[in-house]
Length: 275
Image 1 (cartoon, rainbow, N blue to C red):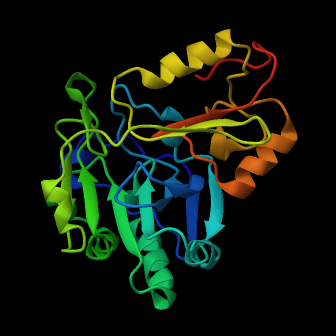
Image 2 (cartoon, rainbow, N blue to C red; image 1 turned 90 degrees about the horizontal axis):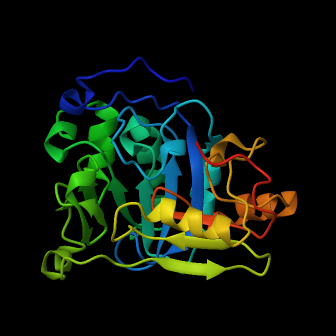
Image 3 (cartoon, one colour; image 1 turned 90 degrees about the vertical axis):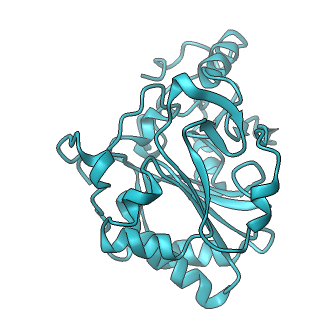
């Protein structure tokens, strides 16, 4: 998938739906997360976004080139097998740039798990998406929650599931009606270290510049921070030099940006810094 020409009016008109039926181009996946929506959720980060929000914490998810192509049936099988999660959160990148394929994915999952919930992040306003592509409207019809609006670094705040105060949590069904009464404060950051030495975090940072701060601290502690030349889907991620760790991450779907990151022990400076 190649990058479309820059479109300064896209924020007003909404994103083009670049879906290829039966396929999704992903940046990464995560089996379980408790900080990106209600309950325990799987997370899918798609590759590609037509917006270029200043201060985006996940620039590696913006290009439409790269990523990993995965089949919708394969992803549906993965999601239906995650019995400990109640739904999926769609992030990126921009999910509505692959809206029809994501709508098809949710349909396939709900054939076997009708109560499986869905939440999505988007850089576009809900009102714009309502008048968008057929695929975009189909995806909206299948969502329970939507976090809408571009990230605005000047309005960064410690907010529930959001990075800046211009963004909203939009209730699209009654399933999570209780969300409206929750205290509007961030859900925090999940941090873990795997048996293979991989460090990961997940969540919306409460302060701006969180990722840069973490990368600086890990570099000073002797961890390798850099892009991986073999796997375009994870370029820009904090990771180690051990190829086995790379394979483990793909197999497990470790959490990564835009709302998390990961690393593994290594020799600092062994790879160029993330662009």
